Every structure is written in C-alpha cells, then in structure tokens.
Amino acid sequence: MKKTIILCGILVTLLSGCSGKLIIDSAGQSGTFTSTQAVQITNDKQHCKILAKEHTNFFSNIGFWLFSPNMDTKKKSLTRKCLNNRGHSVLN
Image (cartoon, rainbow, N blue to C red; front, side, top):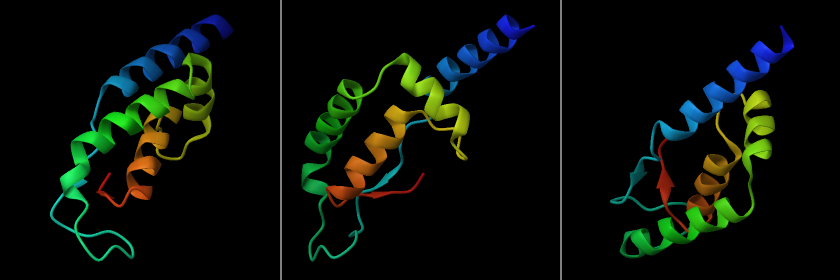
C-alpha cells in the first residue's frame, strides 16, 4: 500500500513538473522599478531556470510539492521567485 502511494506521488510530481509554464507580463512594471524589465526577459529566464535546476533535485521537488499549497515543485517556485526579484511580473 505504501509503495503504491509513493509511486502515485512520484508520477503526479513528474507530470505536474512538465505541465504549465510561467506566465510573465512583459508589458508591465514590477515593484519599485521605474522602467520595464522586459528587455532582459530571455536572459533572465535562462539564468533563473539554470539557478533553480542547480539548487534542486528529484527528492527536494517531491518533498516541496507534498507540502506546497499550490502544488508547485521547488524548481518552479525558485524560478518564479528569481524572475520576480529580477523585476518581472509573473502571473501564475
């Protein structure tokens, strides 16, 4: 029974990690920035994804996902936070 629950959790984690990309409002301004940050969006997305990948692994994603109210993986959460801190407005 425990093995079935663990396998189901792993499967859901893998599927949820592949679904849904972050939606970024590139026309708006975020926080206290006086100009739009959209000119760096491609570079920032690549850097944030690399940083998130370097600081997560399969097990940390599962552990984070189990207790996340949004059912996010740790990688997706770190990527979202990184983009927000770089001045991009992430909608989801």
